[in-house]
Image (tube, rainbow, N blue to C red; front, side, top):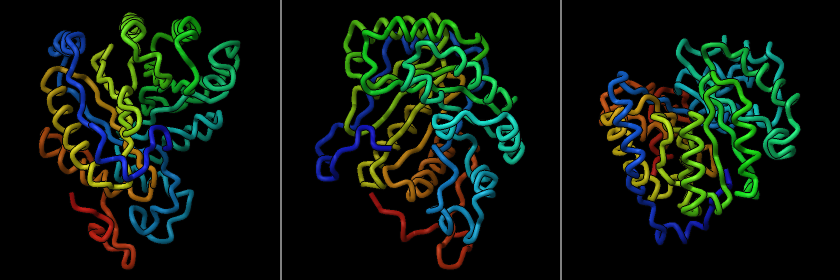
Length: 311
């Protein structure tokens, strides 16, 4: 993931701290607090990572077996595959069957809708996309609508019209990237619309765009896309801060948290994921599956210490 990438030499000078929760986020969580214990879901963006052979997948694992292997280690996936292609429902059903009972797919809207048509005149594409992901059945998690970097606030009406036309039972989180969305006026307008339409607002934590780490919750659910810097020492305190925030949100009444781990070099994603999941399980008293790392030369179930950098 290249969005918000900066040169390694600049990382130590960046303020990576999380902003405090706004009053409206606190109100949303307070209103939801009586609705049961919150859940945390953790995943990555793709399962088809050949570089995970010998790190997460046993050496020699064939590509057709990557998904069931992935599902042994993570509870969900940020499904970027659906951004590039609308898959036949038969493919979707096969994916669902090859995963564990409670596994969730979080499909990304097809790029023809978001980036080419820019949410206009795309009724047929949307119908095809929805027909495709419907095949996930109970294994379909929330969808996320990622808008291009140049999709600014002048397109607000198009965004509203599109979201209003979607089925009411479709859970959608929206990711905006243009800087104008984070000015005071439009930040408030976007928040108010998303809250009224019961849509979530994706939180993107990346070093080069700290405005996207807004921690605004229009609904009592969070979808966090964390972009690390190849296990740079700054990654660890950033993750620790998120563990504390997740714990705080669970205690405050949040219903669901979807945390998606990215690294610019995805070969290292399982390593940093193992670090985070162990700590969040202990801190929050939950039982997310912990990635079982393999020693590359033996394939035995041991933590690959040579890949882990200390703080």
